[in-house]
Amino acid sequence: MISVKEAKSILKANIPRGPIKKIPLNAAMDKIIAESIKSTMDVPSFDNSAMDGYALAWDDQQTIWELTDEIAAGDNKKHVLDKGKACRIFTGAPVPKGADTVIPQEWVKKEGKTISFEKNRFQKGNHIRTKGAQTKVADVIIEKDQIISPGSIGLLASVGIAEIPVYSPPSVGIIITGNELKPLGQALDFGQIYNANGPVLEAYLNKLGITNIQHYQALDEPNLLQAEIDKALLKNDFVLLSGGISVGDYDYVKSGLENAGVHQLFYKIKQRPGKPLYVGLKENKVVFALPGNPSSVITCFNQYVKPSILQWMGYSDPWQASEIIPLADNINRKAGLTFFLKAKVENGEVHILPGQESFNLIAFGTANCFAEIPEEVEQLDLGDHISVYYW
Image (cartoon, rainbow, N blue to C red; front, side, top):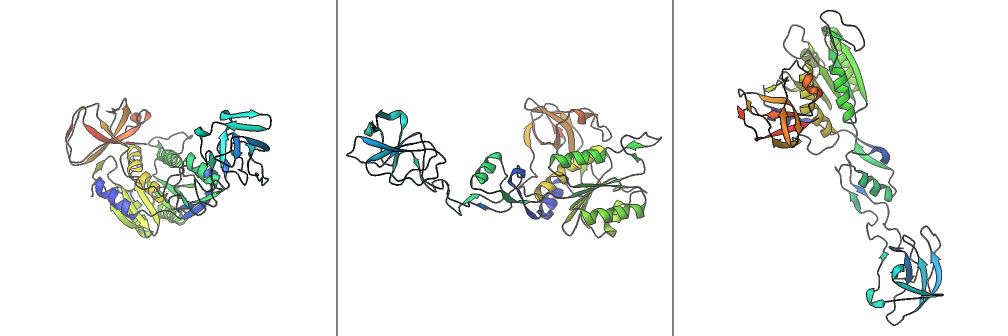
């Protein structure tokens, strides 16, 4: 049995990044760039006016300029401005050849076809955005491993990039085991329970942007379970099993994974809930065998599966706690196991909720995080700071 810290260290060292694929820019929000992106063009791609005003060639001796032309944004003619002349120009419009300065319209005195202005307020080159001032062609504009934001989508679109390389989200197979489980919508017979783990796992995966999900159901019979494991490993990058990983007479998952050629990374963690957690690899396929208890499933998913999937998708360090904040309660308990307690962060404090028993799901109706109590800690007092993990 290993510690929580050891388990996370093993996963961080062994979970691969997913394959790189190109996706449309409009589908890239919150994805991780898999390769640095270079600009396809100079930005601006031409000298243009930063103001509504008048374009001219600066001359220290000249005081009056004759107006000869007008250039609006989007004008694709190649205008030429004669020496000593000026033209009306609007923001974003191309600066005509022969001009080197734009005077804002509010500072210009216009009389008929001529303009003048207070020259001591300006100097040569004012209010022109020169070609390549922001970016030159082949400049790196977004570094590898950055998260795509609305701002970076705007930047990429501005240079005409329609597709970008990202780490592909994994396909995930969910295998639910247990003779006692019944699908939602069907009446329960005596001794049966509803399948809660399938829906909760799918919900968490959807929240991570995972939509390629396959569902498998296996009774507690070795050959049937083996067939589902083999099918899931063939078709999916991640395989999540629920139940059958403890040491009971009907727990066949571990042997089934061994028969399928899965290499064990670790089995059992010094934590509560979720001690009998199994993690293994088969080539680049990742297998999590979770306990059958829904509280354990939710805990293990958030602490181990979620950060592993985020690492696969290129996130740099998804293993850190969300926050370290003060307790609103006192905690006394026996050391030896790391506890992940259902909790709610409110008004800057973490409140430990009642109903911490592993069978009890009622706290999940109001909880928004897990509070981590390290294995060596026996007592925490109100105001002590602890790590919390939002889900």
